Each structure stands twice: as C-alpha cells, then as structure tokens.
Length: 491
Image (tube, rainbow, N blue to C red; front, side, top):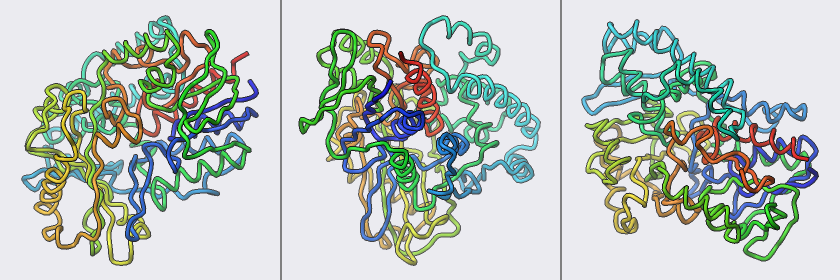
C-alpha cells in the first residue's frame, strides 16, 4: 500500500494516519469541519477556551506510543498534566467521595461510606485487574474479523462473567449504594449504561489506577493540535473544511474519495473515522453491500446523546476540582429513562468539567471555564425540537450547579452556550445524534461491532468509536492500532 485516505480528523483518524505515515504510507486526512478534532472540537469565546470533549485522558502510554513510532517524544508537542483527585463524586445529601489511585486516601473515602466495603473493594480491584488484562491488554488492540476469533476469546470473557453488567458485578463486591455508583459510573464516559454494559468494562477502573487521569495543557484541543503537528512533520497531508461526499468504488474495491467541493483523490485504501451509519448509508450510497450494512446498523442499539452547557464565569474556584460527578436523586431509574424509555426526565445527573483549576490559561485572569454535561436520550428515542428545549434545560442545569456549588452563578456568567443532540447530528453526522456511536453491550462488542475492515469491500477500513474496541480516547486510539495493523498487511 502506497497511498491511503482517512476520512475524519478525530482522535481515531489522527492516530491511524500517524501510524500509516510513520510506516511510509502517503496518507491524506480529509476533515469536513474547519478544525481537526471531531468530537474533540473547541471554541474560543470572549477570552475563554471551551473544549467539546473528551476531557478525561487515560492511558497516556497509548498516546506516547504514537510519537515513539518515529523515535519522537510526545513532550516535544504537548504537556500532559496529572489530575488529582480523578473525580469528586457528589450526592444531593452533601456526601462527597474523592476518587483516585491513592490507596490510603481511597480506603479512607470508602471507610467514610462503609468500613465493611474496604475488603469488598480489594476483591473488586482484583477482578478489574483480571478483565483489564484479558479485555484491554490482550484484546483491545487486535481486530475481530471472523467468528472464530470471538470463540477463541470466549473462555476468558466467560471466566469474568462478561454477560453480567458492570453494576451487577460491582454490587457483588460492595454493599453501599453510593460506592456501587462510584465504581460503576465509568461506562457512561464511553456511552454505556452501567446496568446493561458488559462487566468487561470494569477494566476502566484498573486502567485509571495504573495510568492515572490527565489533562493536556491548554485543553484537549492542544492534544489534537500536537497530533496534527506530528502527522504533518512525518509528511502527512490534512485537508480541512471540505467534507467527503462520496467514497468511490469499483466492483468490490474502493478507489478513492470525492469531497463536497468536487476535490478527488485516489487511494489504495480508505479508512473512515466518520460515523459508521453515515459512512455506509451516505458515503457508500452506490454500494449494495453497504446499504445492507446500513439496514442492519439501523436495527442496533445506539448510545444516548448529551446535552452540554458551556459557560465562562467571573471568579476562581479552587474548591471545585477538575472533574465532578453530580449525582441526581435517582440512578437506575434515570438510566432506564435515558437508555430504554426515551424520556427526558425532570431530574438529571451531571459531569462538571472545570479545566481552569488545573490550567488557568483557559480563561481570562480571575475567571473560570466550565462545562456541565447531562446524558439524554438520542433523537431516535426522543425526537423533539431541541431549539425549544435548550433554554429550559440549560437554565435548570445552571440552577442545579448554583444550588450545589456556586450560589450566584447566574450573576457571574460572562458567556455561555449549549450543545444538544441536534448539534451532534448536524456537525458530526452522528446517527440519531448519538454521542458515542453503538451502545457497548456484549452483543455489540468485538466481532459483533462494526469490523475494522469491511467484510465485503476489503480495502475499506473503520476506525473510531463505532468499531472495535469502542469509544473513549484509549478505545479509539486502540482501534487505530488494530486497523493500522490490517492496512499495513494489505497486498
């Protein structure tokens, strides 16, 4: 393979392109938006920098490896700053739980909830280490192209009861309900319902304990910029502001891409970091096998969407940590409303991102940057007009933050804006406005997820959240490693 085209400059597309370019493949990335990043887009407003996300960086080793491929050092392009605590979990009764990999502090936090659960947590940690080894270290960076590969992995998955949910497994180790929530909420960061997502995803706990939680100085957007700098230094080409309109095919092969502006390029292989439904349904409209694949995808379960309020305020808040989870009054019931019933409930839980407590440069002096994120049903389950809902939900979310953390929040706001499911659908071509692509349940994982290489068009490849292993920075960077290995084997 001499030439490759990669559609989309998200984390997955950039990581794949770096791997290909490092191996000597002339690679062009075609990105439809005016900036690279995909879901890691950003805005600058009134002196504030707002990252769209993702904002939780784990497993920095998978990122450092991209630079090491060409004998370079990630520190040349970006500084990764440790975040401690990883998260502060807060309940409406005033309970706080600081979650980290500091064993002494973490055991003290558990003891404040229930001393009887300290031993149970130790057993959970042992379990998490096991699934981390089997599910991430052994399987997270290799493609599942046939059912035989799934059968081969099955004994390990069954050993850890992969058919059970994360919440179910956690509940077998600890009894305190708040601790159960603290040890199971992580699946929400990759689009999974703790009540239904396979227990294999308990590996996230071990991933964070070993690798820590990090933040890129200047924001996630600066990490994207660093990846672009590395890619271009290697000789790669990034084309912005002109979305791919069509993947060209000849028989059962792709031959290149054509953009909305009419620009074309030929390629020995095409990899897409675009939404998997958009790729099959829209970009491959002339392929019968692609249309059949789109029909199958339409029947699958898609992760929920998000409603995000970005706001810049007067004042600094050293007492509010970088990452907070503000739990609402319900846990299981709220999750059922979001994932199953398609109900925009009156209550909600929030992820609060406060980057200026780590890096004050992301706001003007004596000001702070925040965003508050609430999981909401995707548009397939809740097909409402978000232009009407946005101001109502935005105010309710800011009111909740005011009630729990910043009493005069409305008086302090300098600038604000919201991002809704309709924006995910419009800006990212996300099917039903899903924020994380396919829901990560067992029957939509590994072999049952969109394959890293299409089974019918053998020089068409997939990278990113919709393919194996799934969403989150380690997931999509892992998908790039798996996909690159397949592409570099191509004759």
